[in-house]
Length: 481
Image 1 (cartoon, rainbow, N blue to C red):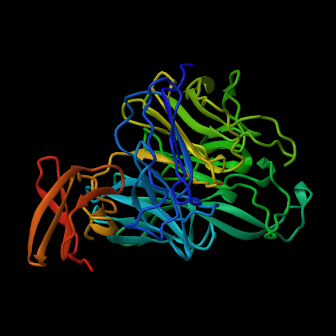
Image 2 (image 1 turned 180 degrees about the horizontal axis):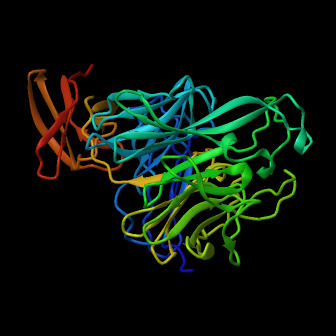
């Protein structure tokens, strides 16, 4: 593997001190970005390292939802340098599964949101390109959706995951007759009306004896199935991943019948060398006949029995007629990571593969040939259920923000616009009247927050300009003491 060209290490929102661009090759530039933003002083962003191995990366931004560290939690868009593009800090709620989707022909931001660290019983949120809430989706038939999936289909329906506790006789596998078993429910909902169009219950099709997790959890239930992803197959049927049966299921979208099982105790497929997986996440099938998944593989039936030293983002080749599955590729990061929970593998339109490392923290971009382009590690304990890459263009309904510091004979003017993607230049305007401001300087945008210098004046504002230097937004006018 080629050596990385440079490493940028940031500690945004961490303790006081400077963060440096640390070169790994002679002649690399050194930067000292700020550890906080005067325009957003309350933000506490995750600490991270960014190792870049290629000049060209896939288009778009990175979408994550940090939690589990001293940093603020909430949906977060990052650029290729790890700089924030948009952040929505949540005070009492927690977000998971943040991404871009399309609804009613337009791109929207979506995520699952719940109070505290509750993984179940929340709602699925849609925001438009001005960062305004469009809709909240809940489970139907009295059920509550959970964090594991919120997938908008081409029909403007939503596939959501539900965890449902029911009383069940587990004496056949050594359990109690009145056990509480958690089943997985797949629902397809009409987003506009909330009507349930399809509903599938795991207990109707998958018996508890298929599970590798039949013990009673601290919550008092037997989480035998643990539904953690729902996808649409190229033929329109559904692909479902169940962590605790270590199996992927293809479901008939009309009848709910299981068309095949991949992995687990009752696999319909013969698995080739290296193709076996366990406790997986994010199973997806593709037009080329492959299936991708994030193989957590962290434990065997005994939670303390570690059988793999690292998680494996996998691409398998499936022959659905011959019922064979062969290993196509393992996507290996520069430093192996073991994610005992969460994780994802996203295939982009150009063949790029983007991997989120779940509980191990961070994400990696792989070129179509499997070589590493970008590797990012959260260094403060931050986790994100999934990390994904998407193109995104937005013009916020809010205005740019400005903060001013006196630096001797000049003003240091800090300008930012949370979520704006088309800002190319910033301009500072000052004057003796709030209604008569004159442009005093224009500089290229530099990261989330750009600093401009200006001579002292009674009134000041900043203006965001696009690539053609057209005004696309302006801050409120500040009275400078």
